[in-house]
Image 1 (cartoon, rainbow, N blue to C red):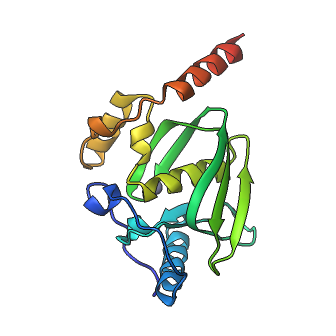
Image 2 (cartoon, rainbow, N blue to C red):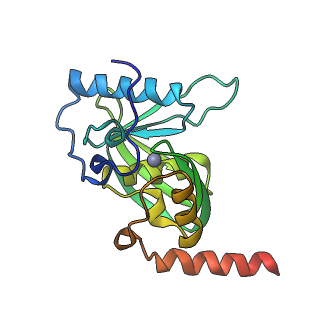
Length: 193
Ligand code: ZN
């Protein structure tokens, strides 16, 4: 138990589909503790089990900052049951040290999951808040999807990956997201008016 090594981009675990959790067993509870310990020791906002090499549908998020009390949220077998709107989210990932990029995301999501005790809960995250971004980012990890698959500017991220000596972009993994892009373009036009 405790602080674990976070896998970096290029490790095949990050591209695998993760398994549903059938029982919130002692093993899963230990995984949750490792995720939180590792998240806090890296000053992160979210961390998903595949980033520790454990392909289970589990992630943790804590959006507290500075002197605020910690508020860890544990998500087991999460489902995004509602999503709406679109915006440009600037994101990084603990598996991509010092790489940030603008990606397309839904503005609001509703997620249903089990907590660390196996109890079901529903959570709304709206208006592109940090929690809404983090839920979508971490949820993707469970399906082997990474934030770089959502980028709007391919050339910008290619350069950043090369600078940090990380593997190149996997072009066949890139998401088209035309519906999100159309909404983003419309919003950018309106902001210019
Ligand atoms: Zn990540």
